[in-house]
Length: 173
Image (cartoon, rainbow, N blue to C red; front, side, top):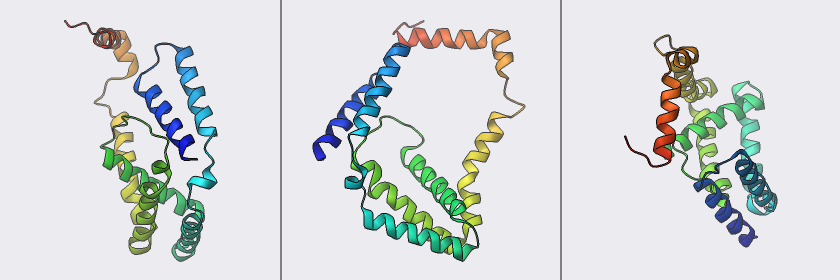
């Protein structure tokens, strides 16, 4: 099992560290990643007892907070994503398909979310966890930002794309 995880991790990291240069290359990368992931048996990677305890705690929180399990799950997921985003400062550098992705690091965030929901309440946790998403939404639809149409008509988008391609191929101004 460890060999399969190590192989999947190494190949996925290599493929994602070297971006494909064509759509066909991207499709091949995705297919190879899917193939490697399908070789991993999650029942051997995920700690079953821990998952059951977390599930039971989530059901208890739903009852305690007078909400359904979906609402608890959503709040916990937003909290966990924020924790992962904070830990990586929002930068996705590589994807490693190992037990670490599914084990304690992720579970710890869910456990922290469950504890915080138990202490502060689901609405407080949902509001705090949703703030980055609301901020991004306000930023994306801000009237201070130029629209896609403005960027196309002004030529700014084409200029940015050209500059990006030149930089990508190593040309300097």
